[in-house]
Image 1 (cartoon, rainbow, N blue to C red):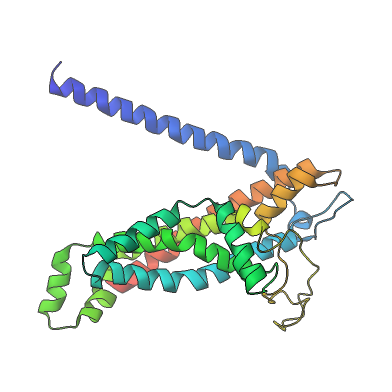
Image 2: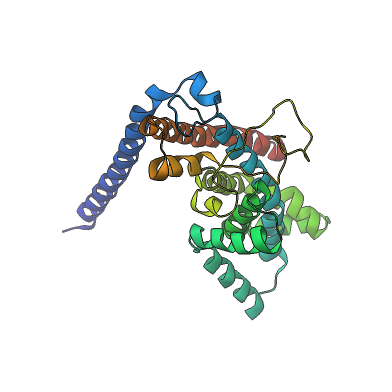
Length: 294
């Protein structure tokens, strides 16, 4: 068999594998959407959940998921960006740097339930934050930092070294070279990593069961005092997210329409992740064009 036939066969096998993967993903998403979209309505998206009656919604769970996502990203992005820049541009190649990278890879492989138990012991009990949005956001920040840091580091290292040499040859400092040339060039890859991490936060349940709680207290959306218990901005209140609500409805719910709520909430979760990814990519492309003039 000659090389051309082997190349065609390999291309055909890879094409077939890709088609199977796309088909599996499309079937999975299609099943969830077909089962859940008919149950979505304005009342379902805005009404509070009910424990023993049918007709409950997921309004508070959607708000809690978005609020937790914003807090986690605010905490995680600056830390991971700084750590990634240091490891890529400033850290020397020695045993200490290798140990740090190995530790990051080990941390990134930890199961989410282990991170949740760690957050329960440290943030809920030791720091006495209780079951709260703050405990959940800190646990998810710890959960996402290894992934974000490795993503930033690999994105910066993918930028050709000649661009660093060109920046230094122009007489600008190393910091200016990194912030004005290297980071803007790597921005699309960095944003892709942030989007993936955001999707994990939005859909995470195991870590939040032990940190942010499994209940969603009634909120007063006219009260914007962040220290009041009924304020939606209070970071020390319990906050059941959408993913935790789906888990609870499927495992221990007593509502008569639990199956419909679970299907509708799952569809909303999938649509939310898809919409967020699309929106983030559009914003990322605009920022990249503005910063690189390309």
